[in-house]
Length: 125
Image 1: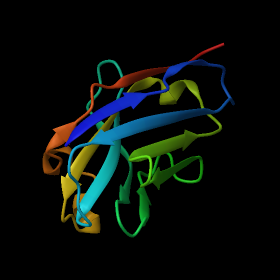
Image 2: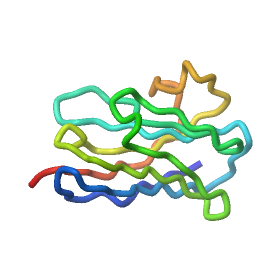
Image 3: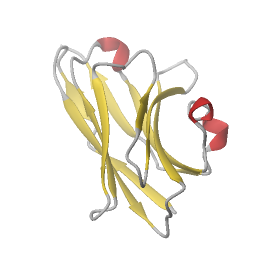
């Protein structure tokens, strides 16, 4: 499966942004699509994940209540709606794909086998 992330850019603090991840190739009901981010000088951080078939969503602690992950199976696209953005959300955001993950494994980047190229989000006034 191939992934293409887009939608990044510059946004003011308190603003919103929606990222998209286009999915091409064969997927199945076991797929999990994840979002990770990496800020300069920091390790990659789990942001959110969604089950491709059921649509169950899971979030990292730092974004819970502000970010929302969704999908459109017809368009083969996963979205990350980001609200109430702050400078701490500045990072390169990556989408990734995995299969047959239990919830406790979703935040581990090593469990994802396919990655998009990343899209940069900068939150600044």
